[in-house]
Length: 101
Image 1 (spheres, one colour):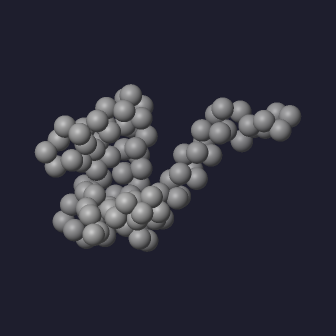
Image 2 (cartoon, helix red, strand yellow):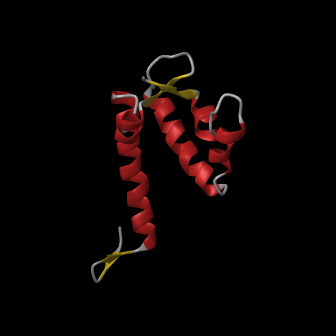
């Protein structure tokens, strides 16, 4: 991490975003099945077979978030146009989002 005169470089900021974001998302997906935002919405992430999310699948799902962002959000648009309402990240990881209510 490079900091010049108290300001982090853009690369350092992106690196921290990826690392902290990965820890946050993966820990919540594995531990609770949902981040606080998903919990508030009454939804959670599970494997396509209904089992809790596994570590490897959580990592793939987070990678899919970034991949979707890199391809200009097309991976997120898949949710609106697919019959199963799954994004690229869900397809990569073998996960689905379900209602808890």
